[in-house]
Amino acid sequence: MMNIGNTLVWFRILLILPFTSILTFVLTLIICSQIPNNIEPDQNLPQISELGTGQAHNYFMSGFIVLIPQMLIMFIGRLQFLIQSQTIIHRAIIYCIHVIAIVSGIFVLIMAIVSLDDRPHIHDIGAIGTFGSISIYCILHTILIIYLFIHRSKATEHTNIIFPLWFLGCTIIVITCSIIWVITFASIPEYIAAGTPFLYFLAFAPQFWTKAKQIQHVTNLNFAGHYSSRTEIKSAYEMS
Image (tube, rainbow, N blue to C red):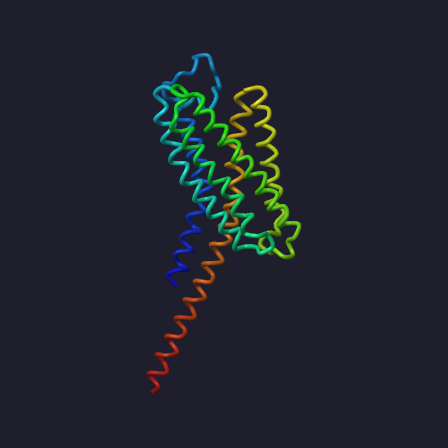
């Protein structure tokens, strides 16, 4: 009962992380945009990294450091869900895909700690590594989900076509905007490329919710069975 209860709490925590992650990201950008930094006064939409310059660096760093554990726990939960929900893809493949996602946390940390003012080249390595690793994860994860949907007769928890379509659409947006950003250095494609993965991760929430409901159902059955057994024992004792 204790293990089931802990698992239920775990999946309920996972359920809220896609939402808290996007909230943390958006609030970090908004707060940094309101703090004095080194952005040109006439620059309407600066690059994301430029928001973390000057006095805004500590807020930029704090926001992304708070974001890292949320994303890592979410990726671990997604890894666990995919291993438990199907048997047709070897778990080594799933582990490799999610190692890429977890490595992105290192690049986010570099990007957050190293200011663009102090060491721009190292900061850029962190930023590019973050974009690259998250993009690669989205591509590989989407391929995996599409494969599971194609073979949905053997993976009954992956029969909903909305998920592969959602993941595919978000991945196409990320790749397209990333390419445009690299070519033009325009801010709008960068913001879209940076924000779309958080929309991608929102699709994790319904499956975390389904898993939590399944565990809650098992918990209720176990409790009912335990209560029934105690009642029967008590009745037998009284009759004797």
